[in-house]
Amino acid sequence: MKNTLTIVAIALLAIVNWQCSGEKAGTTIKGTIGSAQNLQVYVDHLVLGKASNVLGKADIDNAGNFSINFPEGLSQGVYNIRIGAQRINLVLDGTEKVVEIKGDLNGFPRYQLEVQGSDDARSFAGVMRGLVARQYTAEDIERLVDTASNPYLGAYVAYVALSNNPEFLAIQKKAQQKLAAAGPQHEDFAMGYLNFLGSVEAQYMAQQASQLVQIGQPAPDIKLPNPNGKEFALSDLKGKVVLLDFWASWCGPCRRENPNVVKVYKKYKSKGFEVFSVSLDGVDSRTAARFASSGQDLKRAVEDTKQRWVQAIEQDGLEWIYHVSDLKKWEAAPAALYGVNAIPRTFLIDREGNIAAMNLRGAAEIETALLKHL
View 1 (cartoon, rainbow, N blue to C red):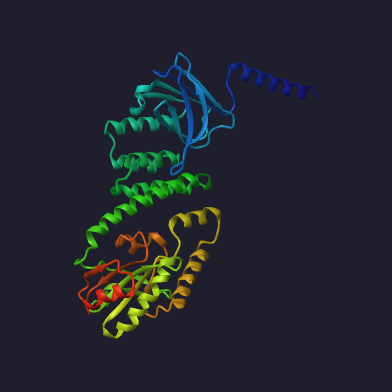
View 2 (cartoon, rainbow, N blue to C red):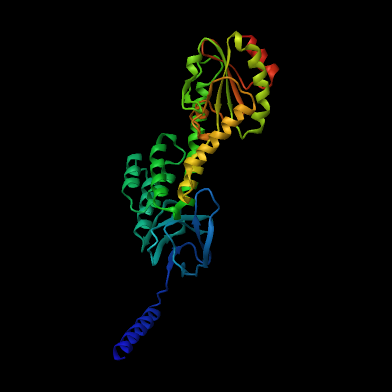
């Protein structure tokens, strides 16, 4: 009994000391910010691709001081500190108790401030100052991505520093993959980053395709498997007039256009006309990541999309043999190569392998263009 009373007394003394010290449970964000007197400060949780979620706010007193306590703590991630029109980011590792910011509001854009209580937040602020001063190279950013124990630090620095530059997509993809692999709790941020990178890559590929895919230019080659795994190459059809047709089983306009393609094919297949169909069925990386994080059977999902592709070929009577796909939906390599961002999309290729016409729709339009090159 005496030992029990002693333990209780020690526990009560610890509680009293904690209360008297003014420390609170969870995480506290506080600071002293010059030029911010009598304004309000907001703390937001940042997730790429989504609106920021306001977690807390406080008034700043006439000396520039503020304090916001989060009793449940702040998890590992990226946060906004907003005062008026100015903001900075904090990258936290989730173990912080008290994070203190000191500086002047006018220095926020250049991260001219002092951060205490979080090694990652202090590191991020230092990198941001270095970026403003142009002191960091892409190699420095990649080194940070490789070495940072907090995947948010590498990912968000890469996102901010390398932005829309497709030259450094490989570094950003590495940062995104490291974050995604850190656990399902990071899925929202990782998926937002993945979508951003997808849009950057698609824009870059479209720009490249616009230079390559022009009437009179050689048609870029495509080599992919059919539903049975046999590979077909577009270049193997040189000497014939080919309608390169991008479509998908799930695309209503494509399915409605298929009878027109079939009609022309039946009429001219014996005269050197061929159809090379590229399906955009399949599963994109965003869906694949969602399946992986939830434990669902990705292989089964891909197989299901392939079966729908095969069924559509049979149902629509697409009797030519050249049906190929990499089963990556909009991320299909040929779609990027040809700058395809909407389907159905067609390219007529002449006997020499050059692009002769684009975006043909309807049997009459296809036939008119075809007859010029048969």
